[in-house]
Image (cartoon, rainbow, N blue to C red; front, side, top):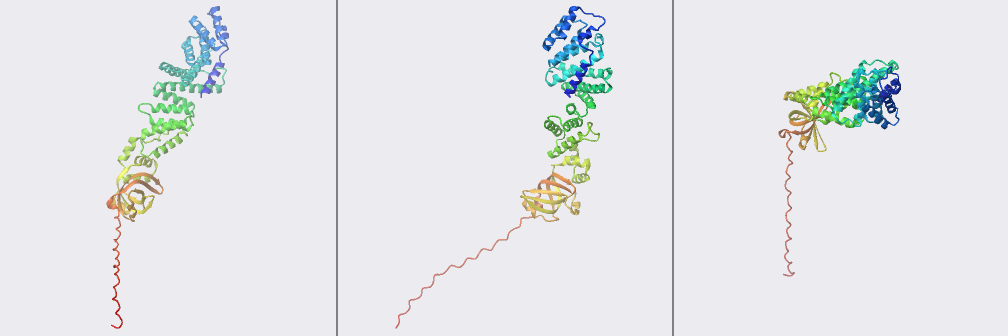
Length: 450
């Protein structure tokens, strides 16, 4: 971008009809003194840029009404550009442009003016990038000069030295340059509507410019109220076009989306962000039917979100399913009725396959589960049997459309629906063996012969 603008300026400068001194010589009637012309000639032909700048300023101070001033201003603008003193470049260009139609000494007035608009715009762009724009007045002058340059460009007639193709390319480059300058100045001045107009006009010429897409997004998002959808689209397009600093811009866009929508599931925000960037990469203009629901939109959906409505809309798919899921994801429901089909246990969590509906009759008539319920802290729930009816609380975590299944977490089954703990029968006390008796003492044998 910057290189193209500089090339455009150089081409325009090359189209000038010869050096300033010779152009002055060609005027039919010389209205300046020999001393005046000598000072002018010495200044514009000085090789050292810094010394040339001082001599040109001395000339302007000494001969404030000279008919050579258009050439002096032009030389000063080029000289300060060479010295990278961009504010002084803009001042010199403004002085030449301020002379307007009264200038009759330049050989090609129209060409000279477009060159000055180009030089001034290029200097403004470079000054802004190098932080040489320091005042509100400079910004206002930059915005106004850009608008004047666009107006002049619209009426500019093709110079004889340019082919039709060359002229068309120059007009495109200058249109981008002027509108970019105007947009930058308006953005800094917080004139966001004007900034939008400038950047949009630039992108009409070059729709693949990631930097101006990003600036356009900023202008939309900083309006009061923000033009959120157009802003999101423009910033997303800059990411898709691989603007430098993509990671930071992606984070900025994610934060803006989060403030706008305040979703309850972070993963859904990432999915929307990725979809937005992909779509914006294919078109500079947001399709009329594309939108991202805001927090008030989701709150309205949530107010109407009964079990029957959620199941119906999620099964129906399409955009309605997307907005309903955005509204209810991670929402907690304190009382859900269901019929158990399967139970399992893994890592201390009981997983129930349940059919849930809006009323008991539908629940009893269910033939297949539509909920996968993760119950924590209630190990006894694993003893629930097929066709047991339960009431439970849970938070909606995710869902799969085909086969349709909603996954719920943080689930608790109401205590009265849990199977009672099985009592282990008490064991009979073990019988104790009778104590051993000491053997009876035998009487001493009788003596023989008694």
